[in-house]
Image (cartoon, rainbow, N blue to C red; front, side):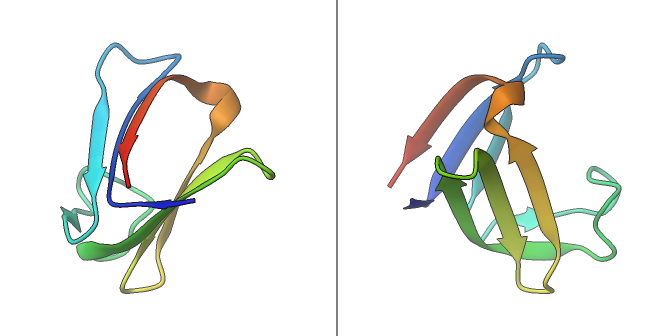
Length: 75
């Protein structure tokens, strides 16, 4: 399911993360990103059990639903 806004808190963190389509992800905050890039889409896939956050530069962030303690989203 594609969403516009996603708020998650992983089990090993006290802080939540907020992602919004159009928001720029910075490579200093997310080490796996090669360049600062805006979010193209956010997909919650309950069949595979993963959250996929894709940027315009074909960079991806993945979160397993098993690692999520709190999840909120806006379609």
